[in-house]
Image 1 (cartoon, helix red, strand yellow):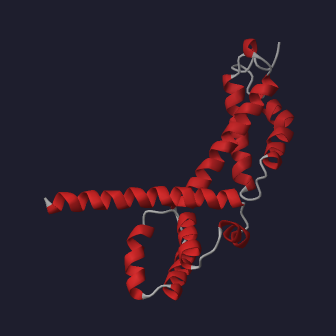
Image 2 (cartoon, one colour):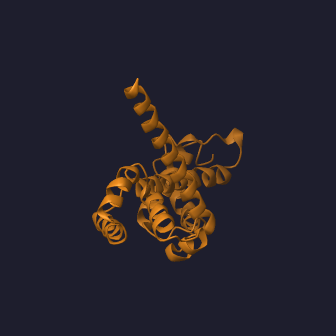
Amino acid sequence: MSIFQSQSTDPAGFEQIYHDYTPLVRGMIRRLRIHSNHEDFLQAGYLGLWYAYRDYDEVKGSFSSYAFIRVRGEMMTMLRKDVRHQDRHVCSTELESLQDTYLEYLGTSDMEALAPYLDYLTRREQLWVVEHAIHDQAPRMIAAKYNVSNETVKGWRKNALKKLRKQYSKQNTDREFRDC
């Protein structure tokens, strides 16, 4: 009788899986190059392992393959949530730093003109706008300054321009309706 056939009656079944697959969970952290929040990602990995143990069907394939997929899936979900949170939330010190940068390089009238548009952008997209539009930096220079790839900076640019165009067209549409 396998561990999975007796999982509903043997409470120690998952403990055995937990110990046997700890190297998989820890290895997945290295494989995904996770360098912070190790404990949180370990928790997510063990949660994925629990889901794999709970939902596993022997007929559909090996447990190790299924566990790999579930552990990786939980960690990737957590990574996506972390990135989304970082993009949407700026801590107060970063916000003050950005505001100081804007005030340092912009006159009051320029700041008033640019500020409403920056509100629609993520922190990284705002960095691109400031570095490119104000400091006249090329994407490769911005990438070097913030220790990211050139393609990443181009992604910031693409998303920022898309949002700015959308906001600009929305404002122009609103003006047209008011003028009628």
